[in-house]
Image 1 (cartoon, rainbow, N blue to C red):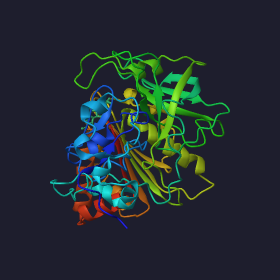
Image 2: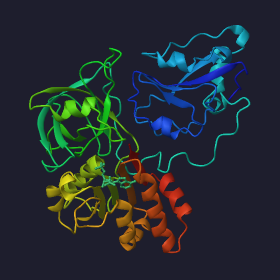
Image 3: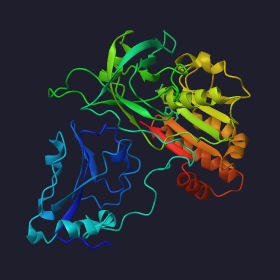
Length: 421
Ligand code: A2P
């Protein structure tokens, strides 16, 4: 039974600042722009949120899924939420508000979707994100949030080396962290948070920065309790102005035996299928190659023991020397993985992006798309999202099929995943 909440009571949507890793996914996903942030917190505007829940499934940590019953006129303001270090306790409502806790319990989950909606338009029916908000059906079950800002785990650096040409602008490092005897179970496609030491301009400890795993579930070295990250040293902002990336510089400068504070793991949807003959189309730029490396290596280790499907990789970088892991990638057998490199600034070659190569390889892409065992992963620059979707649509439309039907199925079945930044 879902009794309605009294009109003066709001089930207010809040984000837990202690778990949130400030990845911006919720703000990007919200179809009504109810989510915003400052240097401290991501927050939900109670005057705008219509409780449509679109932001909940994509959140990698679950910090988004917090609710407090409040008297509507006393809802926590955006300014209040910016100042929080933790969520407030649930307040008991005045009887005049008419909401006994029993009535509130009876209101049930469906009230969440209607709680903030007085005089609000109906939630949109169009999907807010181009990708799936569920994992592939056969994905292994991930652990998330085992370690938090308050309870981080200490890892030891056992490797740190550059994986791009020394003479190039792109300083990208492969960093291996070991967890010793401590439990840190992960899956390919998941990420972790790193807590850089020191404080921000306001004197507060730095927030965690999120990095995708570059190694498979059984370790960077099979059977070892370690994992790897692919980290680009940030020396410029998106506009090209000089900027010092706090965490990327910290990580790229680490030496063997240094220790690092880690939280996570995070992510429950960008996961690889676990069933025989599952195919992977992997599309990435730069450090977006991390999860593709993890999934490729997982598949490679399964060769011989399991029926591994087809792997097709589209990898964009400025030049060969700026493409992380170029050497090891080129050593992989061509009958195991179909590798397509899109180089945008290689001297003497035309500028190419991953979406150009998807169009050039339309026939094998179309064949894979027509197989329900195929999952697609896109990771890297935000800008490529639209380009990749357009290219996939062109491939499908050219063969006389309906892209919107396939796109819906890919989303519904957890077969199309984006992680862009
Ligand atoms: P570009 O040479 O135009 O910058 P980065 O090295 O900055 O991480 O970028 C990785 C690769 O992604 C580069 O080749 C870059 O090309 C390319 N790229 C930039 N914008 C897009 C986009 N909108 N779609 C696809 N690839 C892109």
